[in-house]
Length: 106
Image: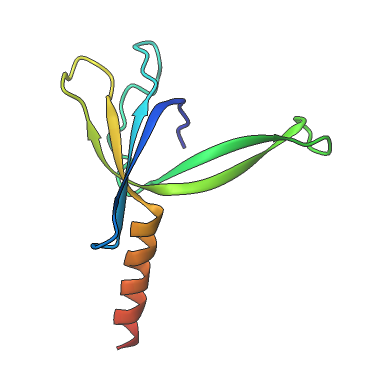
C-alpha cells in the first residue's frame, strides 16, 4: 500500500457512457520513495480522512473512502517523478459491476 499527498484532483464525468474519471496530481519529491506508480494499475485509489477519536490508541481513526481504480500513470519526462495518475471513478466502477452482474444472470 502506498500513501502520498495529492496536490490536485480533477473529476471528469461522462453520464452518457456511464463513466467518470479521476485524475490525481500527486505531490512529487525526488527524495520520496513514491517516485513511481508503475504496477498500481487495477489497484484502488482511496481518500483517507483522519478523524479525532479519544477512544483510539493514536487519538484518531481513519475513514477511507473509495475514489476509483488506477489505470494509467503519465509523465512527460522519464527523469522526473510521475505527474498524474488516471483512474476510473466510483460511478464507472459501479456501472461495470452492474453490467457484469446483468450478464452473469443471463
